[in-house]
Length: 319
Image (tube, rainbow, N blue to C red; front, side, top):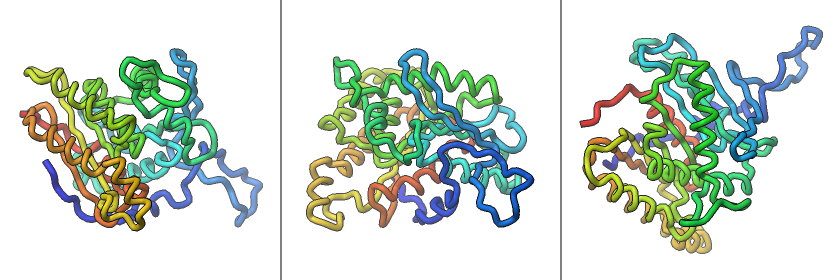
């Protein structure tokens, strides 16, 4: 189902993260420091570690923010955020803002455990590493040092991060959300189409559906064929977000228009939404939202607001 969300201001999320960029959580100020001394910023309740996966040998930087408030009867939802170096601080602040609202306005949803998945180092984006980790392998090929490592990262989440969270917190297995933007959004779609049981909610913002000549469109077709017959072994919600300025004819320059037209992101994402919605599967709910006035890069922040709302929303009945 398509619906146009209430216009979002990207500044809302940007303000939430202002001053909160971090490569890790710093130590508290020493008592001997004088007033007015500049100190490293911290995120309350957040931790990080560089975590080496024993299966792949790769190292990812993983941030975690503990949930605030009482534990819901079904457990806390979990929001996994890709591109954690750039996105975790925003998501963590938004979750704290949500938890600070009066309990009657939160309708007993419970605050989310927020997990950021990124790469070692201080850069907001490690472009080479994200292409390596967020892109699916080409059919019949193994991942390389440059691309195709999506399965390794999804396995790391499933076999390392998720069990660790389950030991630390009471988590709700029916409210597990994966968020990603651009290449991260591509990984979200790949996860839904190849392992729909790993998460229950998938939030893809401006996913790079153009990758490898639109390979993800073929993966979607295989998904629809594989699960064509009921009953289906999953229950999933897919939230798609796309910026209005990502449409080729609305791009500000001729050169940019040519790139967008070649990638056909607008057309492919709409096609994908239409085809999935037309299935009328009770186990799959699809919602596409247009973000007016935003280009590809600006979509991330308001889409993250929507993803947190999706992650913390109550369990839904699929029928």
